[in-house]
Image 1: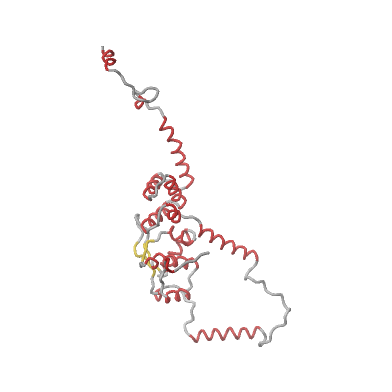
Image 2: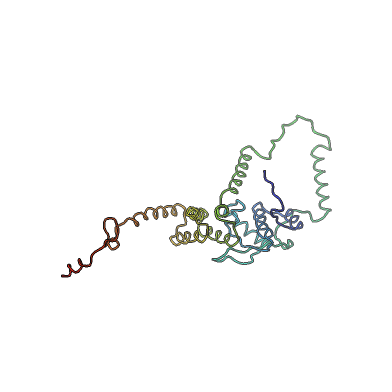
Length: 286
């Protein structure tokens, strides 16, 4: 059973911000990205942080395209701002804009109390007219509408979609693999992993990490040396990467046991250096 405690860490977000976000028309994608941005900025007592697309994708379960569109829409709506553009050495640095009066997100809240009362009054009038002046309709006069707000195929499709999102959220990512097999993920390594995922793919980065772990190494610099080799050979597909590594493994025994006349010169059948007496050389010269 999960038992989270505030003592284990928490993210301090002002109540005023939470209330404002609740009444704005944010999409579910935008909500997810906002939570991640709060978690890795306010959650670490900082105002901004570098966020790669792959990192946001791994923390939200969204697709790569959805993550890109979500971040872009929040920037366009002035909900998050770009502190520093992405470079070869780092991801784009983002900051949450707490001045909600500058957001370009429509609010669902009524403008004043009179509007709320008018809406309530209209709803009650509509209810009275539908029942014929308050008289309840006879029971059993019509079949009850289907519950659940949709047909069975539609409900099945929605259920499958929700299950797919849960599976995607639990899917192993380069970030989670690093924390489980290397050490605690810090911001510097997070940026590097994110950049490599953007340049190659998550699968390729994971493969390099697995090779690093299998060789008993726990340094990301070792992983980067593998990734650079693949990048220089334009190996951006996981199948090409695996074929490349298999070819290297098959080539190693040949290189180790192959014939080298220059190397084997002066060696006997056992491969050991043979002692040649000095007088043999004098005899040959004579």
